Length: 134
Image 1: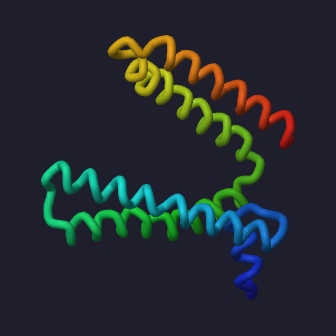
Image 2: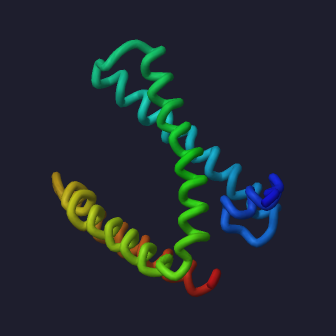
Image 3: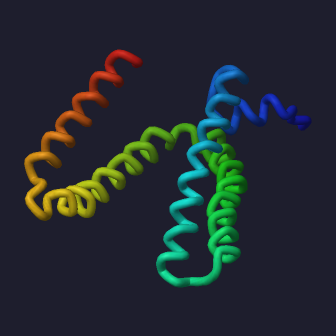
């Protein structure tokens, strides 16, 4: 089976149109810049090596996404009936991490009220976006 570059990009992004696939691909690429920077700076501050080592660690953190994106695209197309359950499991895992790690951390040193208000505002914004954007 012959697969064109356009159809591969559309499959990888999950978008219905190639324009949106390119926008999504660009957004993911831009998001990788601060992610790689965070990994690199963490390795420098932990004293794990030189700037060259930190640069290679940051690049390696981004390169792993390419084969995993292909694996993810294949898994989504092959296991389509299980996708709602997998998304629900991922959402539950994210909520667990937030409630177990992030919320207790934000409620230290007298910032309880601000953290709670920020959480409520964030939930309201997400609900509003979910309803208005569909």
